[in-house]
Amino acid sequence: MNQMTNVNPESQSPMLRVENLTHRVSLETDTLTILQGVNLEINRGESVAIVGRSGSGKTTLLGLLAGLDTPSDGTVELDGSVISELSEDERAKLRAHRVGFVFQSFQLLPALTALENVMLPLELAGMEAPEKRARELLERVGLGERLTHTPRQLSGGEQQRVAIARAFASDPLILFADEPTGNLDNRTGAAVSDLLMALNREQGTTLVMVTHDEQLAVRCSRQFHIEAGVLTEPEAARELAH
Image 1 (cartoon, rainbow, N blue to C red):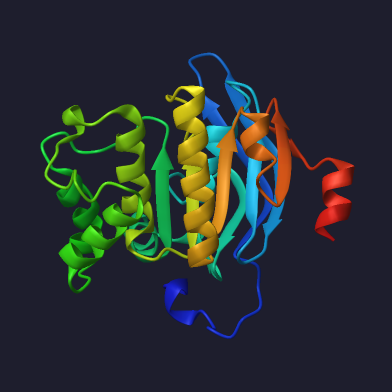
Image 2: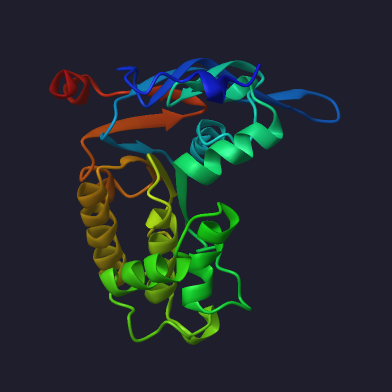
């Protein structure tokens, strides 16, 4: 049964609920546990940072939360759909209409202009007036004069602004950001962080961000730490959240 068709729009369920999430990968002679027994609940409109060092499992966790991969054990429920039980096609459909992404490496298509990169997900989702929406967002992120430039003609900060515009283009319910300032210098990273947080507030999106940058993490309403595949929420942060 396609659970995506049975979501109650009046439901007060959290935007994201994770229960006993475990992820293992098989090696030639052993099995490696990357995530172990993760439990997480994120309300609609919250901004959440998951902080951890390289190799801690944070990017793997983000991929599972977004339905890019399926867990070994446990469940991931996004906007009322248990995405860990959906088919690959059903997960792709859910991502197209409810999820936005911002990646550390920008992930722009090099042969397309800034405008075309932002239009593409709108066209794939069959949305009306994709060019108008893309232009509006690129102007909002300060790139109204760079619409016809390809990624190689843009600086790193400009490329990430295009990526942010693309992520918000389809009005996602939830946005996943993977080290969004990781490839930028401090000054450019701070400007991109300001833009990301401002757009998130304006659109009321739920934001889940993984980062190793503590200064960026504290701008979110809640912070979690991940180490060796185990996710924890500091006691002080948990008390403030409740």
